[in-house]
Length: 333
Image 1: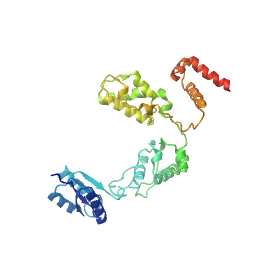
Image 2: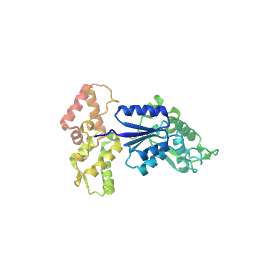
Image 3: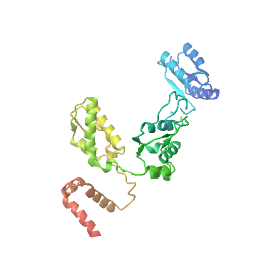
Image 4: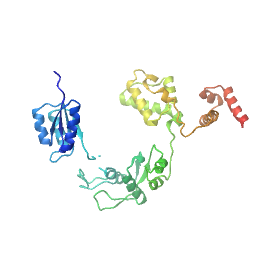
């Protein structure tokens, strides 16, 4: 006879406990409840459970202590942790940037330097600056205006000499307009902007970068792979690369792991050909097809060096066909 799975629920909140018990019972689980860690331990000793669901914060012993006990004593029982409290605290980012004194918050056991203080006399690089929480944006702006920090829990102010570089893959101007990024911080960090075009706009870089990743991962995984087939190179160049260099890196790493030959073929790249041939026309808008064709031809002519034969070949037409299209454009003007 098949018995219904038995679950132990642990929570000091009787309302939450009753609600979860009702939900699981309706799903044909047998449910036992405990309101404390000690009570749950006694239940585990007397009954076999298929799973344990416990709250994180409870009076006395916590869900973490119960988790440790179950892992060491009943390692075959899966444990699900629940909590209504935020854990990874609001000032975590600030503590990482500015440091903190011993006792400034829970688990602050020793004085710890922040990233800015560690970088004193050098450069701090902050990637994905658009993800910085609003409170930390204010703190960073204050530091950029007046290069001093006050570690969390400290009355001291420390003067620093740090160059700050930031990067983002988002349109910060748009985020400013949408009130998702501080305008004053945007203008403070936008001193010398360097715009790196997406990979799809510099396809001449794709193969050299792919080869570099190939050598790196061959060394890391001890593989003897010496290059790409011509079809694989064609796929790499024609793919749209919405994930840019990170996607290319992951693509080559995966190919090195699964490839069994001395060359990587297209079957090891796992590139979606439909997505790979897609283009982003959101910035172009709706224009007549003839105008779009003319724009694209001129973009190819401006992007590629060499003679017209090579350019026509990349467009998939003859030199005569290229001349004809350009001549018709001049005649229309």
